[in-house]
Image (tube, rainbow, N blue to C red; front, side, top):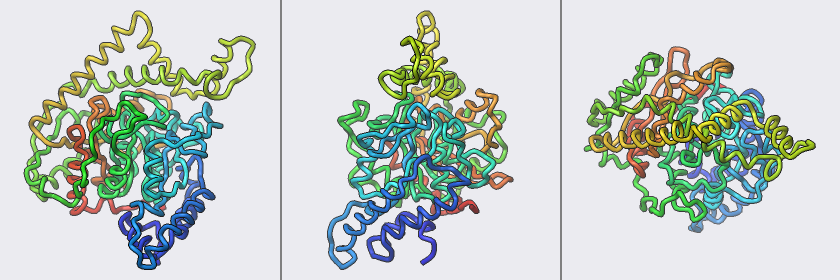
Length: 494
């Protein structure tokens, strides 16, 4: 049989059940590919090869009766290897969050999303690289080295879920978990030419996720197609008693088929002018507008202009609120309660020494920004005002969704930039998130998928955003697009 890592997710699961190959053979194929490409790409922080092989042997024992003709019910992903972003706890594996502050932390428990995937039968290949505490747009902020984009190793894969996106794009894993606080699933999906979902806030449990911005963090999925991403999303979504922000709403049962295009006949897609700003790379705008034309002309979906007038304020609002929440969440890493402790004579010096040495520069920058915004005398002027503008941004989406069902927009102003290009300019790095931040501030779902390439051969992605809890409609629309286009089938020549 040809390279097992080239199969689609449905093909892989079918072949496992039919006995065309074993989970052990599949896992070894992915581990061999990782061994060959990982030195150049650095998509992983931790590789769990021995554990993965043992999980694969157990999966094969479960699959064996079905291969002999039995009809034993099996978990839906039995024997499938996956990768997990290294901000999600996996029992027994290091969870560093890309930081020296947690370099020796091994969780004694699983995050809820990991728990649900293990119950579905997956094999965990390892933990993928991330910007430190998920703070970044390039994966350059990881304390464990830079991940490289499989399409061009001199360029970034995006961030902060750059390791997961690069792993999927290079076929080091068929699917991976990421997180999205301000675009950290969608932007790397765009840069690496894969598909990724940022669910509605509260749709997926954050229990076991090392927090960055608690009112913004969402766990998402990266894969090659909308249909593949939907398979994992369905399994991880839903209420969790251990996360009070998850709502007790059922995940649609039966989950609507991505192939059911009947709901698309009356679909209306809105296009906001505010997302096509001065400075956007021409190739990015052209590819996104061409994709919108495909929805209109080939899928016969009505396309309408909409306005999201407070979009321009999303960037400053996010970079007040997210750092403020980060400063509170990361206060626990003080050398006393959590993390390593560096020796010093006075307690205050323990704090300063430990946090000063173990946190990276971007994390310290955001902690200082957030602490300033929350400080006495500035709270009302900055943090409280930002919360009010956040409400205006959410109301923009609510008004737009009275006119349309989905909103189509670019994901990033450019394709993947060169490693080090924004190293001395934090504002330029923050501007990479300008199109993704509003969805996080409003809490609405967004699905990223590839729609073309720029003249340098780098992928271009676009996003569809929907009403709260309308992920199935996002999957259906993107799947319809991917049925008549081939951008998601392209792979880098690694």
